[in-house]
Length: 151
Image 1 (cartoon, rainbow, N blue to C red):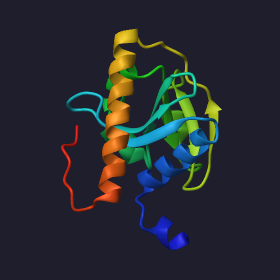
Image 2 (cartoon, rainbow, N blue to C red; image 1 turned 90 degrees about the horizontal axis):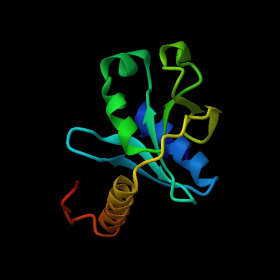
Image 3 (cartoon, rainbow, N blue to C red; image 1 turned 135 degrees about the horizontal axis):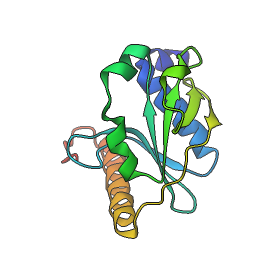
Image 4 (cartoon, helix red, strand yellow; image 1 turned 180 degrees about the vertical axis):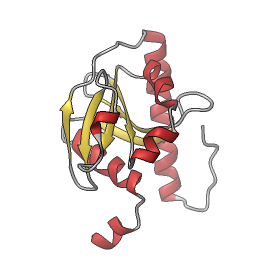
């Protein structure tokens, strides 16, 4: 199993740990979902009550300071979190967003994100995008030679 983990990039390890943790709370997760042109969320989670969470994984100070697109993700989720490893300088992160500490195996929510409910029409669009993204990923696993139209 460690051989598999060693092939992941640092951000992918965070995605994996976050997805495992959220799955233990009844969420289904997909990675690298495009909510709209120019944005790609690291983890989108669909909860047992239909709630949508977005998690932006930051593997280093440079990763955080060089990419400020995260503010564009806020309008696509009910809650927004940053996920970082235990060595990340969390004082860099905005205090008004959620915080998750993660590694390749586990995660813990240290600060719950404030809730900003999506409008019903936007929620419907996002749930459909989530479903299509998940189905395409599954199909690509079952038929690796296929090149689907990604969002």
